[in-house]
Amino acid sequence: MKPIVSACLSAVALLALVATGAPAIAQRTDQGAARKEMRAGNIMRSRDIEARILPQMRGYEYLGFSYDSTALAYRLKFIRDGHVVFVDVDARTGRVLNRSR
Image 1 (cartoon, rainbow, N blue to C red):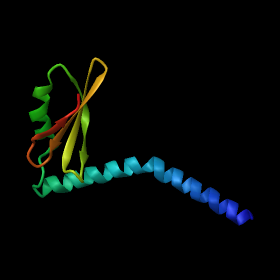
Image 2 (image 1 turned 180 degrees about the horizontal axis):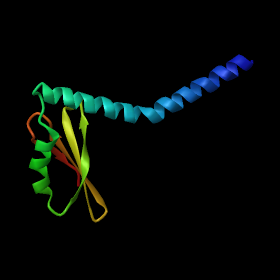
Image 3 (image 1 turned 135 degrees about the horizontal axis):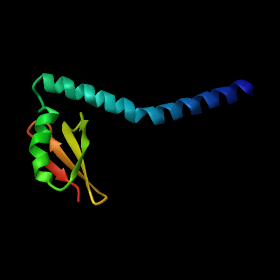
C-alpha cells in the first residue's frame, strides 16, 4: 500500500510541476522559435513590428509583446484607463490580424 501512495504523490507532484512550468517553457520555446525564424528571414523583427504599431496606439501605454510560433504572430499588449487591448500582428507581413476592444 505504501508504494502506491508514494507513486500517487509523485505523480501529483509531477503534474503540479508541469502545470506551473509549462507556460514558462512554452514562452522560452516561442522566443527561440522567433529568433530562428527571424534569422532565416521568415518573420519580421519585433522592433520593426513595434515601429509600425505603436504610432497607431497613441494614448495607450505599451506593456510589451509575445510571439506565437504556431500562428507566426506577435501579440502586443497595451493599457489605457485600466482597459487592456491586444493587437495581433502577422509576423511575416506586419499586417494587423486582430485588435481586442
